[in-house]
Image (cartoon, rainbow, N blue to C red; front, top):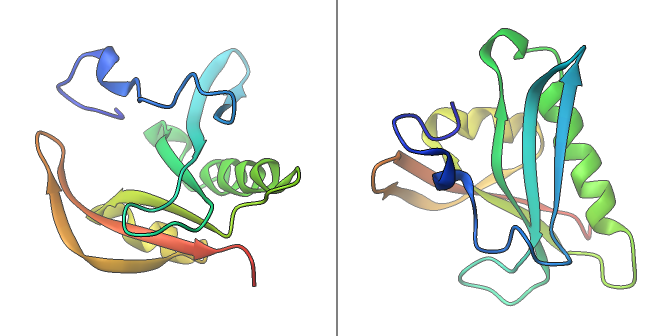
Length: 130
């Protein structure tokens, strides 16, 4: 679902094992129905402390129940803990998910771009230091 038509190892990201990275999951009964990864990294064109959301997915039968919103908000709260909270949150969102992130307070930054084998994306950004 996260990376259709690709092997499971395509969902392993470079900073997954970094000490500042963390991963959230939501279970309903015994089923894992949502996942999201968070890593401390600035946006590619910037140097402000940021937290990047990657690999977020909710099973289709569980969408629309607030699971994704809960993971994003909890992840941002965890990222804000400590001495050096991030100034912003960002992600490379599929264009089909840009509206979803906009509802969570993210704004599009720049134009559309293609990630080979996955599809059209946009960068979505939410200021956390306001």
